[in-house]
Image (cartoon, rainbow, N blue to C red; front, side, top):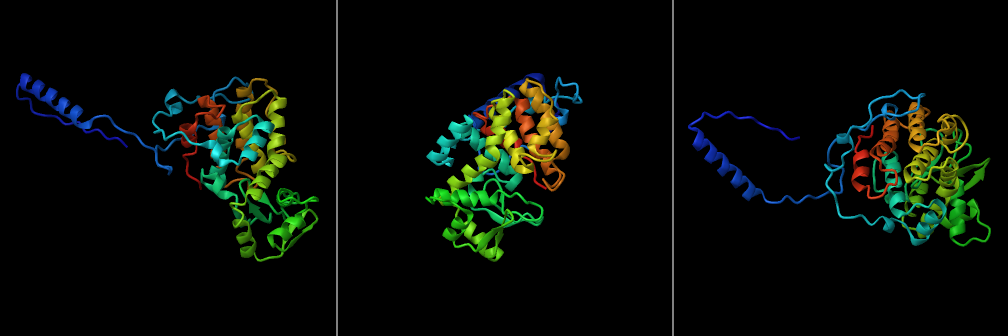
Length: 343
């Protein structure tokens, strides 16, 4: 915080005061010199209030109009810039080529999408640290694994994506007939498929340790992205393109919704929200309604702990208000919109 203290002085003659003023200004200029700025890796910086998507100005009569972000809110110049980040280095060449071919988005755009996804998932922008992430969920959905939270399944998750991940890993390791069981055998994990759910027989600590050990396994990383694409990304890209939308921000918004609330199914999934977002061909108008609809449900049904879900949506809607829809040259903006406190 910048503070200013006003001091009053007793005048001792107009000319003397003027001379002293010029002397003081000259000494300050000579002493200070040019200021070098620097960005640190942590999230220190200005606390930023992100606008509620329901309050973004729009032309859709179905949405309550409100004040849009002011130019000052949109200004990222107050964020100090770091050296250009090597976004492509966070992907293997094979994964990078696969993503470009199937989504038309490059490494910088996918890196920024993953930062926005990982903030509400792990409260961390360093998403590449979570390939080997694993923990048991408390809500009867089994274990959650990796960069997009694949689950092994349970009473509250009868169609888990974790089995697909293990099968894809077996494929990446060269299996001619890939299977979940084949992957488990490769990894020395005791478990079996039962009614679409992966039942792990090992202790929680042993299974978690096995998954942790895959953090730097190139086949595991490749399998992670292939599964992520098959289950969530492909559908999200298709839904964006069928509406004539191709921006990285819209595709990323759909992917984040799909992995958080499901791609297809009930009214709160990506499919359900899209059906309630109108039919505007104008991308901003459509997405404003989409963000408003998602905000209504994102903190319900164990999707997120309130108000994390609302802030999760605000990340995307604020970037749209800032006009950063291609997610290029957006390092400072990404830092700004993710600068909120997880509850």
